[in-house]
Length: 475
Image (cartoon, rainbow, N blue to C red; front, side, top):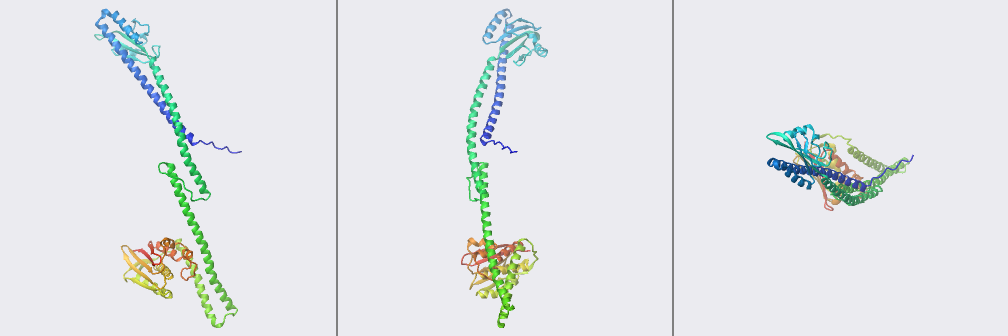
């Protein structure tokens, strides 16, 4: 069975439906409220007008009872001209003067009749059907004399003209709704076209990213959510691009590392294999055998050092080593480093100078501290010729500071942050040297300083030497 394709609800229709819904609901509520208000206003005005006429008729009848017929005829003409009518009734509710439009007062409910006999005016709107008519306002006024009820007057007026006015108002409201529909459609079409265009650009850019293009950019803004989404998209692409560059750089360094490993290990292994074969087959003269054995020993030590350096890096990076911190006399450690590396320094005509006060103490793991300083000092020896290397120790508030400074070739300021990368030295040169062949030394130094919860910085300029500054917290 082929699955049905879901129906799309286009953005323009969503916008239009949303705007139209708001307009329709708003105008319906407005129409209902306005109609209700106008009807009540008309009923109240009509009732007030009828009441004023009724009071005037009763007052005139009280003042001139003899001329009652004349008064009634005058008011009858006036009210007829205003499309109104009135009727007189006695205390029993019987009509004794009835206009042709007047209903029977006996249909008045008992509760309203009781209120009428007590002197209250009764107003009945057209929704009250006891009189058998609709669209008419009724006003009933009592006639009291010395507190006694003698009857009253009933006035009526149709409200058909008022209903027409309300219908006309609703008609105008309908026209307004139709105009609003047109405006809403144009607004929805315009807004949806803009937003859909922006969303389409995002979709196209996302497709390019999925195809491997990490340099694509979209126009961004901060005035709405789509603009913020575009900003986030650009930020994401920048992150991916940076990550891909880093991955590519790591992959290049990995390839270079494997090439260097193969190159560096092939040479000592070939030497060891050749010497052993020569000794085995008595191809090496007796006077050269001791030199050959010494050469095999040196090359074997070199292989062991390379393997140990890689193992150390992996252990440190995976937190598989444990530090045993103690208070160590820094001056003594610096002198040991000076003594151990003095021969290597002399080979390049370098001089190692120790500058530290004997009372300065450092809280660290002794073996790892020596490893840190040997790696940095070897690095300085490697890139310094006919110069000086200073090993300094001093104190700052809460810190013990160790400095290793040389007068070597220095490092380009753009390259300083890269020296902590694994295999970085292999990127610079494939020249064989006996001190940290594969650029792991400084990577190990960085990891060990971090494990000591310390800090390490490098200050250098091309051709002006390099200074390493290590800060370790006091206990």
